Structures are given as C-alpha cells and as structure tokens.
Image (cartoon, rainbow, N blue to C red; front, side):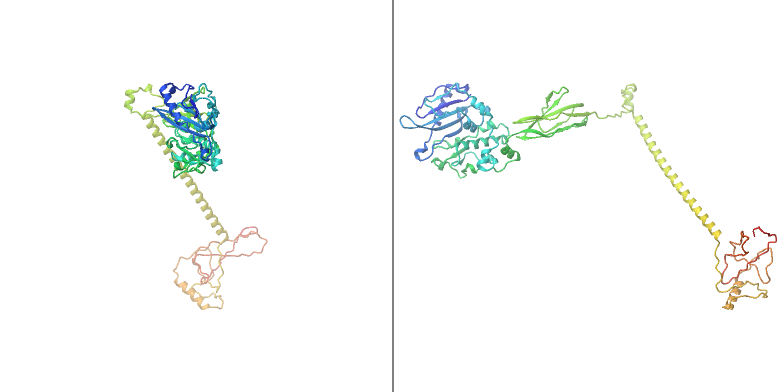
Length: 556
C-alpha cells in the first residue's frame, strides 16, 4: 500500500512510523532518502503577504531515488499562524510504487475525490500507519467521461484532447478557474487517453503526466509536464513561455469519430451490427467468417470453436472481426465470436461451417492398373481408361444421332410444305381452267364491216357490207387471201353454199348449245372464237345441219 507523510512547518525533522506493506520502504537507507526528498518538497509560498490569494496546491511528481521510481501526490495548504505568530502550512504526501498505480484511479481523481486528505494537524510530522485505504479503492471506479467540465468551460467536450496534444512543459494561465475545475479538466483529459494509448493501459499512462495546479518559486519546472500559473504569483512572469495561454482556450485540432463520441457520450457497451453467417466450402478452400460490433471504446474480438456440448475453445489467431480458416476441418463445425470493451462483452450467434470433400477422378495407365491394383480391389467410383473412352464414344454417338434426327425432322417438314404448296397450285389452275371453259371466250362483234369469205373462182354470191370503206375492205380480204398459204380443206360431212370455201383459221372452243327448257321459243345464241381469226378482216359463217332424228323432249 502507499506511504503517506504529514509534514508541518512548525515541526521539522521528525518522521515516525510507516503504513502498509511497501517493500521498498523496508530498507532503512531508502526510507531516509525518501523522507529527505519529501521534506524538500514540503514548502508553501504565502501569497497573502504580497497581496495575493492563499489557495491549495495540488501536484503530481515522479521521483527517482537511487534507481527506484516513486509517484508522489502532494496537497499543500496554508495552516494559519502558529503560537509564535509565524505563518504555517500543512503538506500531505502520498507515495506510490509503479506496481501500485495500476489498481488506482488517475492522480487528478485521487487529489480531487479522496476523502483521506488531512486538512488540520497538530502533531509531529510522521508517516501514518494502520490507515484504512478503502477510500482509494472506492474511487477507482470513478469515471471522468463524458468530459462535462470541458463542455462547460470551452463549449465542446472534444477539446479535452487538445491538452493531450500540447507539448511537454507548457504553461497555462488559470486565474478564472478554481482548483477543483483544474483537477476535473486534467482528470477528463487523462481518461480520454483510453483511445489514444496504443497499449490501452491508460491508467498507468496517466501517472506519467505530471502537473501542478499552481507554480511556486521553489518549484523545479522540469518536474511538471503541465504548469498552471496565477497572475498574483511572481513566478508566473518567469515561467510563462511564448505559447502560454489560458487553459480555457485549449482546443483540439484533430479527433476521430470514435474519439468525438467518447468525449461527448462516454463509454458504451458493445453490440453486434452484423452477425456472422453460416459458410459452406469445398475441401481445399479457405473459410471466412465476418462480424461487426460497435461500442465505445471500439470492442476487441475473440473467436471460439464450439463443440456439440456447447463448450468453446479459443482460436489463437482469431482476434479480429474476420476469421480466416485456411484449412477448415472436414464435415460440420461450429464457431462463435465475442466482442468486448471496458464496459462489457457480447457473444454472437453460433454459426456453422460445412466442408465438403472434393470429387477425385483418377486416370491411371492400363499397365499400372494391372501391375499395382488388381481389378477386384478397384474402388467402385474409380473408372478405367477404357470405360472413360467408351463413355466418350457413346456420348459422341448420341450427339450425332440427335443431330441426324433433328435434320430428318426438318427435311420432312420442308417436304410436306412443298407438297401442300404444289397441290394448292394445281387446284387453283384446275379451277381457273374450268371457269374459263364454262364461260367461254367473248368474241366482240365486228365494228366496221361484215364480209363473207368467198372463193376466188366465183363471184355469184352478193357481198353485204356497210357503206363505209367497201373498197378498202375488199382489198384487205383479197390481200389476206393471197398472202395466206394453201392449207388442206377441212371436211364437215355436208356441203357449203356456193361460193364459200372452208379453211382453217383456228380451233373453236365452244360450239355446242343445249336447249333444255322446251317451253321457251327456239332461239339460239351462237358464239364462236377461233385462234388466228381477225374480226376486222375475216368473216365467219355459222353452218348448221338439221337433225332429222329430233323429237320433243330430246336434247339438240
């Protein structure tokens, strides 16, 4: 436990007893050297004699005595006048070894909150023993974040980082701040070290930041990292450097989002934002699990493998948000991750990893199979080279047969379509011919003249023609008859009138007329068409022969 020494200016040189079990102080020589050094630190400058203000002085020092380090917290105050009307003061010191500081709060918290500080003393200077140190243990849980004092003094809690960023040995003017406010500002800044200390051992680091709440003329400036000056103290002018400024004007330059949240909101327990998910891989592939937890300070991770009974085993390298297993075990395995910070811990859901074996197909040479592995011992899933080649040929044959069938079906479809189209074309042609045969060709009557084709040898039959252009018609007929070659005479089976000559001018396409309705008058409308017949030069004679065997009801 720490040692404490109470010293008054009215009683000098008397030190008795010790407290706790500090092994360093068991050496008589070491103890005497320590007491001598503490006596040198026990002084107080009465500013009221020069018109100043009396105030308590709080300080934190690190002493090096014969190669041993000691952390000394001191509280010095005015003790009024003694019986001889001389000024008096009271100095109370707490001495800690480096091994003891880990279990206690930071120096400003002890100086500000510990209830064991002696404020009146009428006895000899001595080292106290058999003290109740529970008060120090009780304040070890005092938290100084969020940085409410920095928020009140400067308007932003983040400015507490500005004090940590200042150079060592800097001086601050604190005329507008009380000793309690100064200690609160120091305590909040030192607790913000939790995010700045890479070792995350901020309590030990905070004991390296030495300070005094009011510089005195007898102080060694090298003893303090932070020096507070009051303008009513003559030492303030000598100790102020070029960068000396009021402590209330300290500002932070650069902070992270996490640091800002820590200063403004304080610590927060961790909670998972993204839970890890189940993973399935093939043998030989790495497995990856990812999780994300948030908290202030940022939580740390630890992965565990979980057996079927729910027991977890630490994975040595599983201390990050992502767990990578280069060679995951075959089968099904279970994992879980735990996130923790100074405020607590939280465990994720259990996730599964399924690792499947990779399919292996061996293709040994035929000679090697015969000489090394008997046929009877070949595994069922291992196929020989001949079987693989047969299978390949069978697959090729199936593909060729499938292509042939597709091509055959395509040809059948094309052939069927061609037959249908041909049949439709033939039906259309047949119907058109039938229609033309039934209707018969229309022979328009001659427009200019009607002439009879006469034989050149006789001229006994009169020629009937219109008055217009008779000579031209006769000439055309004669010229046509002269230019036509002689052809064999047709045979009708009956004679023609005199002066008429039968000749082929074409083939008649419709020359029959059937009368069915006998009640109507016997009227015949005859039409004929001949190939090569010209209506403006050739004449047409209809020849009829009486049917001697006709009677009523018979077609004619």
